[in-house]
Length: 133
Image (cartoon, rainbow, N blue to C red; front, side):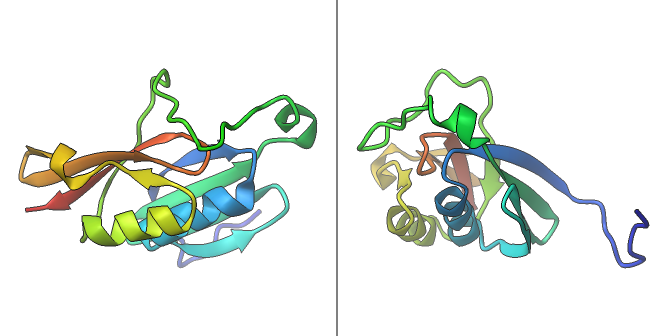
């Protein structure tokens, strides 16, 4: 397949999801990402140098995956994506609206000129958000 001439290489990550639609909505709204491509198997989200693929876990495998209600964070994951955002309050509202979570503001810490808070997406994947001070 030929690469379009206006294609720009982007940093990003792939998140595997039991519920692609719900997890995709979380990242779209918390990070302001636009859907560039949507197929049954995946959504490609992109904005300002960031690209994410929300990949649907095949139904046969997903059937054995249990997501607690309310969602519990997957604290044992060795991977935590980090994203710089303009407004943690807006992230909190978007996370809540889409079934995710952002820890309370009093749990924030400051690191390298940013206010930092962890949260999780609707399937419990830990995500870190950083707002420049």
